[in-house]
Every structure is written in C-alpha cells, then in structure tokens.
Image (cartoon, rainbow, N blue to C red; front, top):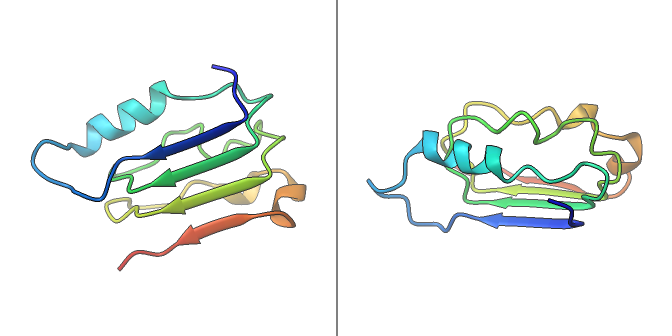
Length: 97
C-alpha cells in the first residue's frame, strides 16, 4: 500500500469480540510502504504488542507519530530508532491508566 497518512482507530469499546492477537494480525497486514508514510496515528489499539513495522527506522519520511489508548500493550514500539528529524517534528504518546 502506498499512502502518506495512516490513521487506525479500533474504537474505545473492548469486549469479548475483540482479541489481542487478532488486533496485532490486522496491524501486521496493514503495513504501509515505508517510502511514502509521513503520518502514523494509532488509537485504541488493544493488542499485547505492536507489529514489528511500527517504529521501524526504514520509515524515514515520518513527520508525525501518535499512539493513544494502548492499555493492553506490554511495551511500546522502538520509536527511538526512527529518523532524527522526527524527534524535532512530532511524536505523541498518550499514557493510559
């Protein structure tokens, strides 16, 4: 897939129909082409861990990363390995309690 912006919002309701493993599988399949993605926003993701492509340093054109509502995750993606220019632009991680 080649697009510059990817916003994934799973919705805030988490019930028995949503499974953490399925959410990661969906995220895995939605991996965008790394030469075009500029904005990545993940909202209400309930997987236990993020896909390997989230935070991959090959996404060198990223200018904005936003992660909100990741209450089930045991760790965050490795955003520190993203391009240096992104740090001066926009990384937003909202902590859920």
